[in-house]
Length: 508
Image (cartoon, rainbow, N blue to C red; front, side):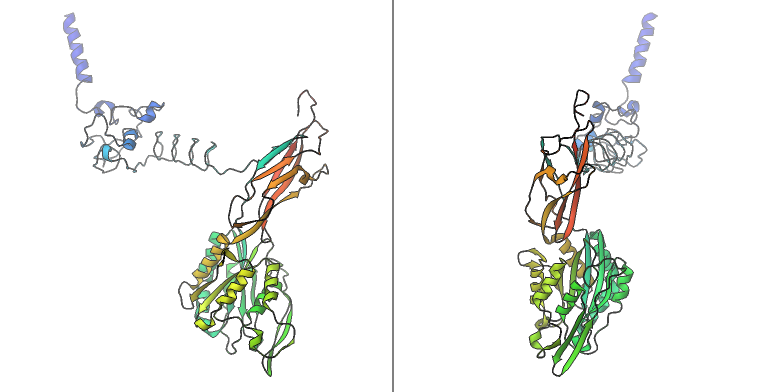
């Protein structure tokens, strides 16, 4: 009887554990019947990791091997995790190719899984955005690829020397674009395009690339009418102001001589002009221009009231070569003709840059040489003998977009002459903090493309003058900045800590 009972028990054990072709009947949704790679690292086995929709933990999907326990090519009778359309040995949702051929399967929609997949909340070293592993996320606290702020504090005991590496950017973040539009009758289609697109194709397109842009408008009339220069809009950050000003552009009804040099000079200086121009004896016209009044404007520089620490960019749109004194009457009865040299000096005084836009009408009137002369004189270059000037048909549908393209190109590709400076920051101890700086590299001006991130490599700090008499440390600061074309492009404030005396048996 005892032996019969023992045999019965053995038969029941065999029936429970040894029968059935599908291991899933016992291991629920663990398709392969073994733990995944992640499980071997301490994670729960798949039999309790019910939200692992693949059923194999992902290890065989990534390797491309078929599940052990399933013959390659067979269908999966246990889709797992609520997946009702999975006919393959994976989690593809309808993919009938077994895991061995499905290494590129990416349809893992799990958002809480702890395995090494592509979910967004797990704790494995994957591509998520919230975990604490050594990955590429933007919020974690591990020492991975995060672009964290540089450590800008150094300890500098009396008699010590410390080298500090620092990176300063040369990215242009603030520009003032002055649109200068020829009112010639042949420009009428260009005027129409500007009116329709200046807000979206120019203003908004620039704002997408530049952190702090502003715009102004100058209308270029003709000397015969005495309106060779008209400032229609001071520099503004309001796109509606710019649009309203552009809407006032109209074609000149008579006359033909556009005084480009006068417009450039006036926009750069803002000085009063009282020239009386003899354009064909005995005809003359007085192009009297009042000095710019920047009261209440965004800035106070030049004729358009450019802002401080903003790069002025003159964008001149015309279909004519520049007007020359030699082509006109015998003299200027009052005032002085604005020569090329005068114009160049006035623009360089405010570090203005230049983009010439030839509105194609007649090849014989192409001002390309005039554009090149001004671009070269104002260092508006992206490489040797390469400028940002362009040409576009007046009736082109992308007229405004082409202008924005050139402006963005200038801010991203212009060659800048930059240098690093060390500046003192006041402190309660009356110490000249620049004396803590022994040297820095490079100390000489460099020519770099705008946006170059590495401009200052190493600063050597040295404390040979200040011996802290107190027990507590004393803090000092210096400002390190990179400047170019009259702009402060980037700056850092470095804290210098000079330890106190050994008041308690150890240095403070």
